[in-house]
Image (cartoon, rainbow, N blue to C red):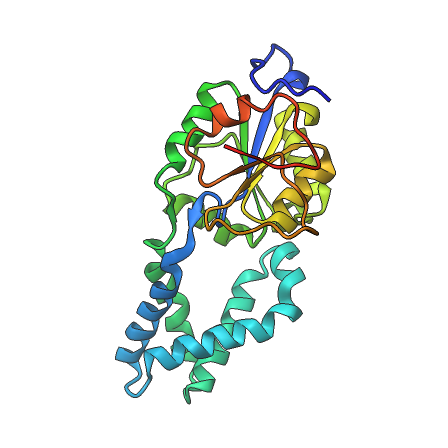
Length: 263
């Protein structure tokens, strides 16, 4: 199938070309999140003498790992579920550290959004890449799995509000990647043609999978230079970051579903 990524947006919605982008790991750099959690632990320790911040971080991580299989669907798809799940995690972590105190859980809920705000940062090349896509005439959308309030807070904290035409969060539409419905919802909202549109993300099994299932061109953002497993979905294009994304997409005339180009 011939895909002309350079064709400008036409006068009717059906002719629009869209680029859908994952959030975490694609647009946002999460490397600061562990330090933010420790900052929360340090601030809680000032309220609760004897609380070890490192033990608190380890306990919180362990609680989340144990909770996740139980709460994943609710977290991804449940409206308003995030706050209750997060409270369970804070309470569980503090209990493991020897502090069974609802007031301390309240404090964690209040403190952590402040701690984590600075950790919600875009990769350096992201603002220019999004601006270039818009300047090239593509419609753009962030398509992300998670709780709506938290994902939208990340976007705001990172200074990405308004940099795309649309934000679609799984919990707000009731369907999560890699189920095709979430990408189809974004395309419908944008009035975009799937045959000429793209999905960009860092997760082969989620982002590249959903893009392939909907018939979009796919771009794998492989920031860590990982080797793609033979059983993983094959992207049309592999990139190390989003610098020059508009030009890289435009250079792919006929995406191949069985081979990966780097650019």
